[in-house]
Length: 194
Image: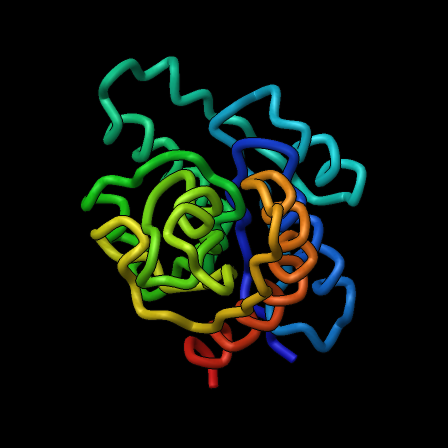
């Protein structure tokens, strides 16, 4: 099988990255991790990826000040140099510019901790609780120019329990994210290379 060359972009511990790396251990999985890249040099996920034998790179966005596109040009160069064919954002805490999105549109996916189109952006769990929703969940979607607005690939839902806090809900949802993301990445790869 000709597996797509995958880059995973992270900003922190990279638990969703770990789920993707584990899925990719199966030679039948349609994506092969070639690079884990972070905008934060101290991101714990870089150590995890390096321990798994995956090349890592940190490009510190703070070095570029307010010039977001200059940071993204370095990001784009690193991805292009590595021959990347598909990108999975896994807790990458940067809003990407239209320039970068247009470069990778149709080849970049993201996981978001809500049942989109509800609760785009931040504080999704608290917003679901405050709204009195019966359930919360996570969504994997194609990245588009609008934040959390791209076409939905797959979703998973869990009930919101009495007494749930944003933290308890997030903790219960995380295993669902870890199950959903590899499955959704496989769907995305099939669309790129049927």
